Image 1: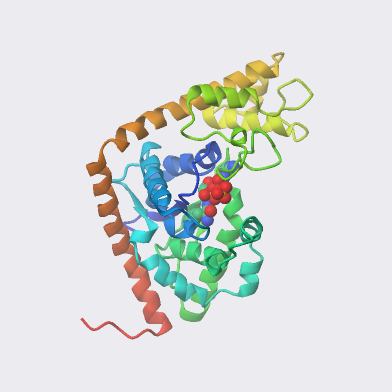
Image 2: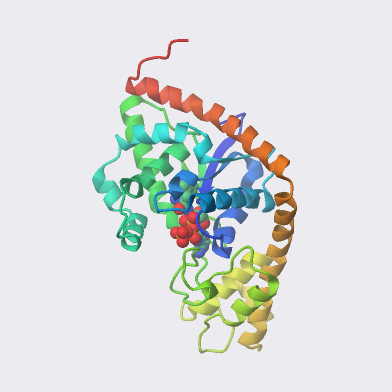
Length: 334
Ligand code: ATP
Ligand code: LTN
């Protein structure tokens, strides 16, 4: 609890261009539930360097991501939007939590296995302990809820285990966080392969809608989307391509799958794909306009970055000092 409100933490990596999956699975939910919580939304740039990055590019992407948080509708006066690397407590708590996490636990993480396979030439210790840094992010603010996509559930379970283990030894130090998974859009699939999740690191750009894609590109990608052979708009597991498109359509319009089936009853895939494309354009266009406007105001963004980092540093210090004391670090002399 902070100022009588429950605490919410979430973050995204500044790697690659954000996709519609990131938006519907994460960012959109962040905006929807923000008012109910005291929120911390971090650009987790420290997580990004677990795979090799071009420094100039990382800096640019981090700023783009932070701007997108605001463009998507998060008011930085009410939501603490900041860079992870600007707040010292993340790394400090991560070190301590490393000493409360088992190798066996980290070995089971599917994201580690996937990324290790993808970056076989650079399986560094940071990639392995990535989930511990994520646990530190969350526990540092005594977070109650963490809105994420389904793919992050395993990391969240680990965070809870680490927190419970620590509390078991030292008493109630950490709040045990709960995941918040949105009802729609929790797993947006690739437009080219509905068995794979839409991902910003996909080599095939036609599989993903990027938040910055212009309307023509969006419509073109939906026209080319892989569908099924039944030739009717029906929401079922046997038609994973159409099911994915219905999910996207519902997430963008607020309609239900049943309403969508009725709307397109007797119509072909062509009409439906066009409608899905248009619904996505109408969601992304205002976000893109706002992004362009914000990007022009350097002084404003800089002030957001500075003020919110200070706020995050202040709140995170409270937990960090408590933890340091519990584990037996000597008190600071003032
Ligand atoms: P990468 O491809 O680089 O691993 P990613 O696109 O999977 O990245 P992350 O940075 O890992 O994105 O995720 C940011 C947030 O977006 C997380 O909360 C994640 O659960 C959510 N997310 C990512 N992809 C999707 C998707 N296809 N559908 C729904 N949510 C998603
Ligand atoms: N691992 C997450 C990003 C992330 C995160 C967090 C999400 C880092 N720290 C804390 C929620 C809470 C990812 O890859 N999407």
